[in-house]
Image (cartoon, rainbow, N blue to C red; front, top):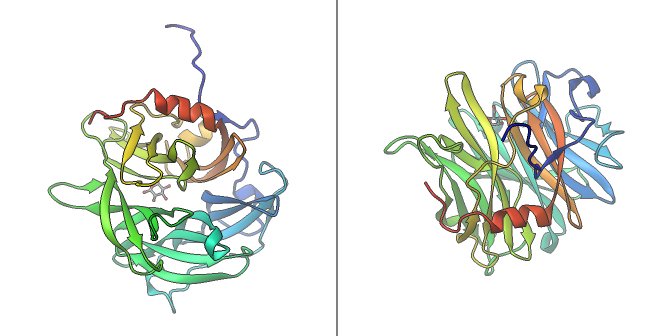
Length: 319
Ligand code: BMA
């Protein structure tokens, strides 16, 4: 209907983009795809920074309100260490953070860019100054991983996105389990990319870490569609059963957020919104997303509105 304005679930912050290379204390090509956490009342972003070789590292930015006044480490906080970790030869990318109360630590799941392709690595930190690597946990090609904050039936669980080449390329979200965060098994596909004209037909991957709600694990994922002028990265949602996260309770048919503004539509890679972190205070979500692989933006949402939307989404999604 002409002129009708629909309420958007995610609301862009007027100060967007909230972080870009202009804010950076050292030379960098782009800053994007940041993980997020609230630590001692401050918002901490673990930011992917790409240098002028094309290699990425991670740097911490801290803010009192999660919007402005960022204090940024003056050199890389977690730089690739290919001497000890050859799988990091081409950089470390796209971190996701999970607070694991049982270990009294933050766990980082990040992409190591190895000679054989991207793979999933884990690291542990308490203060975002010292990081202890737990090493690679999934072979290539695999990325877009995040841990659940609690054990599920006694085991750690992780969502991730392996890429298969058979019978055609497929990139879907899987879950794996581990007794010790090192040995992973019981792999199972959880959410599949759709096909044909769908907005999430080419590939999908987890965006932010799973968020526990009374109704299930709230999942935000990116879906890719290829067009004559390139790929478009948009976001959809799903709800997984709290006790058995292999069970999808709901999945949105429509995307809930996509590139619209100039900073999302134009950059090193056009038409990309790519969140790796969100923080919550009560009902309010602050979603931090990489925009066009060039800067970091913020959008807010309300948990109950996202759950309402999912409640009205199909139980058995169309493919
Ligand atoms: C994905 C990841 C992201 C990137 C996105 C768009 O495959 O590599 O790091 O933001 O592509 O280029």
